[in-house]
Image 1 (cartoon, rainbow, N blue to C red):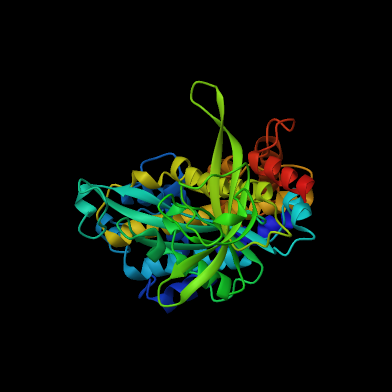
Image 2: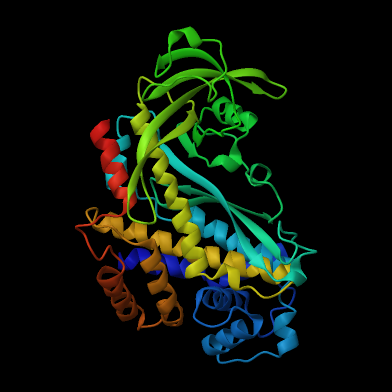
Length: 425
């Protein structure tokens, strides 16, 4: 693991590689005293460190790393479209080079399945000050906002893609699908209730699973359970009499594509109330997963895995403090966001290394991210020196000591759901 970590850090912040990329994207015209690799590292440290997220803090971090304090105006002038392009490229490069290690429990559950991966998709708003509202309009007129739309691989626990838009952009418009989705299951929330989107996923050889909006009333075509056969051809609405679990095929209207048949199910699950009581509620889902391979109960269990992307946003906002940006400068906002995402990719990479070394443990992305950020300046300062091995050994020890599930007897929710899925397969 030491060798893999050394390579990851050395590659990500390699001075020659970063300088070459910086020149290609126009992040630097003359090198002078501010090297883009040092600047990018200062941004990552500032974006996810303990101090206020600001250019002044990044400037101080740069000084601590290089022992050179640039003029305030000179440092501020570095925040350009070119710097944003450089930070995005570093994020993309780190994502492409990240360790790919399947989570053992979920891989077991999917072993004989038609699914190659499960991807949780969602968007989250980053609140900006009111002065940023012109550049980044929000649904709240009192402040601006950026929408971060993320696709997270649940099987590999890595970010698959990120899209940045203003907060006012609808979830559906912010989502960019790859051209090929063979064997991938997309877990979507109600913000992506678009029949055309579902048809596109199916046309690209993918699968989807999403809650059915109450206002959606498709026409029943085939009934497997839960509704009397006399209701074939009727609309699926609240006026019908349902019995226990519902599993039907229904016809949906797709704009400019005619009509498509998708599967609709209703399952009953336990829901914890704030006062500690538990109630049984019926949940409706629509999907194109085949009924002979996935039961309604399995669909409900799989959908719970979408909680993983919620955890990603929680880490980005709690550890990365994305909501703490207090500027209206577009380039500063984007540069800090990509710096935060770069730190998150490194954290996910470390979790994958830990799973590869010890498949029986559960690394905590939240804890690993916090440990990484506390040690990143020391690690980078030791790159290429005799201290590197000792620094990485101390860092690895901290990961095994503090970066795993502190209570193995109580596995994380995702592991519990994966085990349920494996048992019901």
